[in-house]
Each structure stands twice: as structure tokens, then as C-alpha cells.
Length: 135
Image 1 (cartoon, one colour):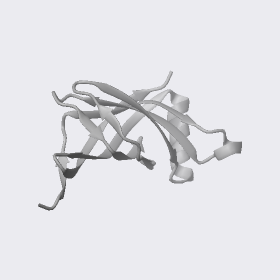
Image 2: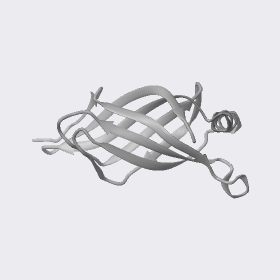
Image 3: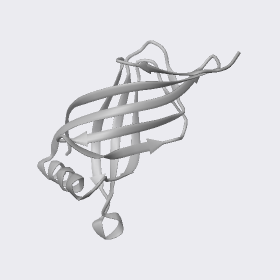
């Protein structure tokens, strides 16, 4: 039997922005650090083997955050993920700085989580939007 790859929507995951910081411009002016809160509302756990998050702030595509380490997403649990990403350009950096200076903004996150179960590999596709505040 051959193992396949499928894509599945997962409405029971919620991904939100808990915090954002921008690296010192003198060091890496195009890098941002996002802390994402990933909530699994399902009654079963999931092992994430890799993830990509396409992040928009106030309607501007900020960039894509990718990670390859494996971690468990517990049933009805919350995991914080700290991800570094290269900001996609000057306009995106200006929009991100403006949101941070205001203390928050609106976000949309399009996520893809790689996982496997029973010898089958699959991708969980998820899209969330909302508002965030930074203290």
C-alpha cells in the first residue's frame, strides 16, 4: 500500500497573534518575531511535523513564517510558537511598525500544518483572522 498526501481543512484550530517584535534595525531591519497562540479545539491531539504561516497585518502581507521542528498540539490545548520571519518589504515593515506603535491591529493568518497518522501524511489548512493588541 502506498502512503498518500492529502489536504484537510481544520476549523477547530484557531491561530492568533499574541505578540510581535521587530529586530533592531542596525542588526536585522527586515526581521520580525511573531508569537502565535495555536488553540486545538478538537478532542484529539495532533503532532505537527512542520508549519508555514502566511501573515497579514492591517491588510498587508508581512511575510511567511516557517518552522520544521516537531511538536505536539494537545487535545483542547494551547501552544505558543515563537517564529522569526523576514518581512516581505519596506511597505510591509512600515505597516508592521505602525501596528506595533498603535498597540495592535487586525490580522489574517493562512496556515499549513504537516502531520501524519496511520502511515498517511497530510496537511491541515487553516485560515484565521481577528485583532491583536501589544502591551
